[in-house]
Amino acid sequence: MTPDPVIQISAIEHFVYCPRQCALIHCDGVWSDNAHTVRGARAHRRVDSGEHRQERGRQVLRAIPLWSEELGLSGRADAVEVEDDAVRPVEYKAGV
Image (cartoon, rainbow, N blue to C red; front, side, top):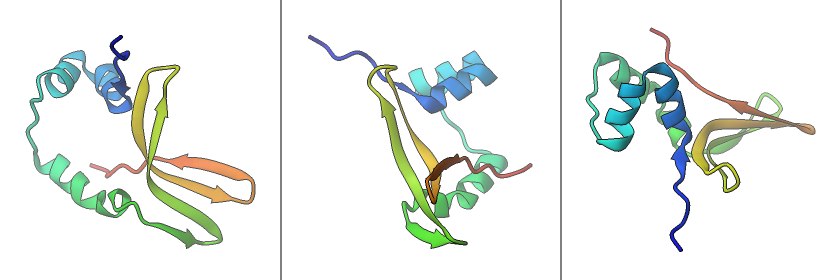
């Protein structure tokens, strides 16, 4: 029995923005950096480090893998903040 396909969470984001972009990136493997994506990648380095630490009284966990076998989704959270009993996902974006 073959496993069910898993969809990357980023593919959903790309599909909502532009179905063609989603197909180019996730089906055909076509990607080309531009000034905006290069700047975003540089800004994202700390997030991608996977470093966990205490910041301002809360624990910040970076590059946390996420998946749901039930939904057939996988991805990665930029960060998850844990403070007291609250857990909050954090998505970092570089502004234009």
